[in-house]
Image 1: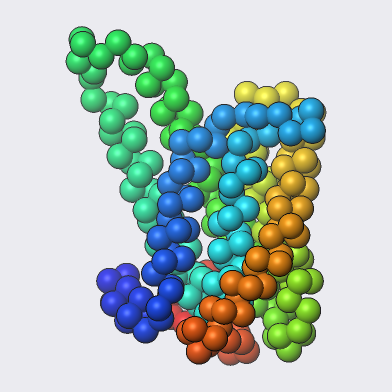
Image 2: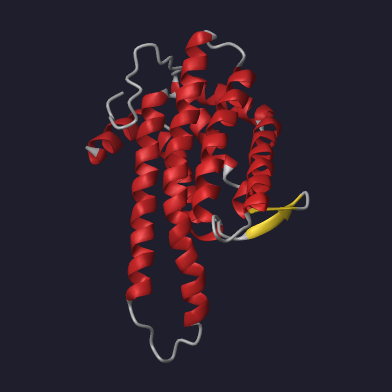
Length: 232
């Protein structure tokens, strides 16, 4: 089924494959660097706050231009790649190291947390991405395609809230104190929404040029929004 979709839709649209590869790239990077905590406004947050909004920006662009169905397919493609990467890491951790490898402790520490992060990221991405695309598709129909800025901000706010709660709840419970965790979640969510607002001028340009280049501006008036089906 996946290979038929890739042959059909990637051949039909000029830039759909590019956005799919970009989405997969950000998803795989998240497996390994998200456990790193950085300080933002005096609060500890995952370093993913600086790049993960790109995934939701891509989801907005895909849903706005190609529709919820195409965005849903790329979500499943990205999740598949993410799960494969997590399994490869898990298997690598099980293989005994060579006596010549002097960094086994660091390797285990980094990649073990990466596996936990991958599980958190998979679940968080699923609920957040579905929430973002669903909200944007419904708002586009409701507004008859007007007020794109409002639709992008609202859908991102919803999707990022779902993503942040699930990701931080799984990845950092037991590692970060609860009060710091709650504050970190709030700051991370706000930063991601601000990121979306700052990126709006560029998003407008990309969306308008993409619609013109692809000759499509999809409205999800008769879409099946079940996230577990792949038919558009």
